[in-house]
Length: 84
Image (cartoon, rainbow, N blue to C red; front, side, top):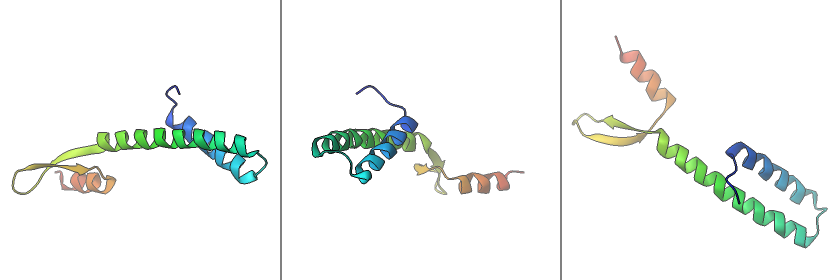
């Protein structure tokens, strides 16, 4: 399967869920699109995990050691309020 953009994959997953919930498909057709959905969901999970790694930031603790921490908008606002 060629690389699919996250938004496209999510839209297709929503369509697959709708088709499966509708119940109008044969067993073979249901299995086929279910397998497609599994592939798409794995792709989406991979994209989200990569995005999470990109968002991690290095911060310095009180002992001067650097450590990885997930970025948070609240943390950014707190740091901005501390600047002169």
